[in-house]
Image (tube, rainbow over all chains, first blue to last red; front, top):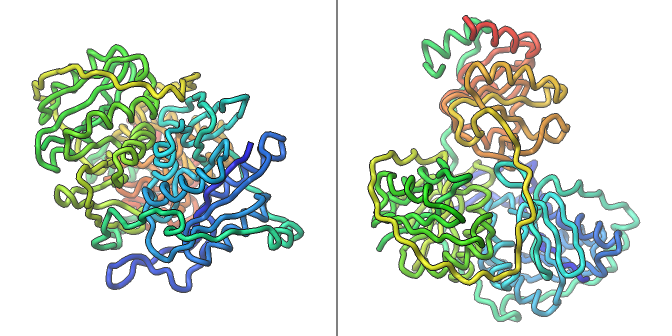
Length: 249
Length: 310
């Protein structure tokens, strides 16, 4: 079974983001970028499926600027076999990403597609579900366990009240949650080997997909700051404040 | 044109998240209709009909909807969406699972996790884990929206809407429910609790969470945890408060042994009153706390439990 994994280049999760002075967006110049953490989990899961003999080939796809090649290289160093970059400098919103991925899926014909449940930049949490919709496939979102069998896959999902397990017909879409696995660090020899793995580059026009945004961002602002309060001396003072000042207990 | 709200319900009861979503839906203008899909849902439909501001309740009673699987549920919503200017659901694990699928099938964008309605086509939503707020305008004919429930008041009781059955859609038949392991708790649910007490890495072990539970019982509070405490294996993930866990905004949030990583603050900084108990007076959590107590939690928690008994 071929496995396709989608990865996104995002501002590194350790970076404290800054809103641009003109409120047009977030400062991206001179900022460290890396692979979206949920996508690292997706790559790791695919590599584990291959190591377990359940996946035969791992194709990793990214959509973004030329620099997204680095994100693909990271995935190749973790164990993916080859990469596809859909290169564009334009803003690509989740619906357009799903359409581009559908086009790649139509060509590659994977048995399973694994994506991160959401990207930590726009926090949309949409692409996997949208891709499943466009393909007419089943979806196992927020996965904490993925067990492929013959013709189906059992996915345990993190839901609000606990865990839920569903059985999906293959081919299917899985989106990853935090507890699915702990991604590996690529070893130096694997990083060297990854440099020789192939990456194909195509454009959205090559795939015949209109990526014009459907949502217009009118402005981006800093959230209101919360003021620090006071320190209390002891537990008795704390309870007194909560009862008589804040009146919340 | 009317707007449609996907009701969330469990074990025959309408969940509170639906009430917050109805409030967001009212802000869009137009009649609010509520869809209750499930199996054996008469009581839920009646509860939805009594919500203030709801003009009509649609019911789709079929076994395919019993477990809220995304594939059949989105097929139903797509059938119904044509008559509406917007489709909304709470940004819960069900809403987040189902609505993007609906949006893609309608060939429209989804607006995720809105915290404010500016106008019928313009919304505010947090990005970068709540470190920025984006105002976005939708150009699509149908707006598909998930709602951050903590950002909207719950709609009150007082309605008397008509209840109308709709035909179930064809089940795509690609998915099936196998089972679930829901966490059992006597305490209120995290996202609905008025008071929450959460523990972090400073708790040192899962056993020590009983110190929190004692205080929680006296306050009628839910118990939460930071991602650090979850990653350390102290407690299960469904207790996690934070950007990658649950977003909460109770009247009172008590953070115990939590340093205050950005990812945790993103999940609780909209709480009305925040209390931090930490022995490190430099901990960033104190920068957002209304009341800070610099103390050893192993001493402070039993004292707190005793003080609340007085």
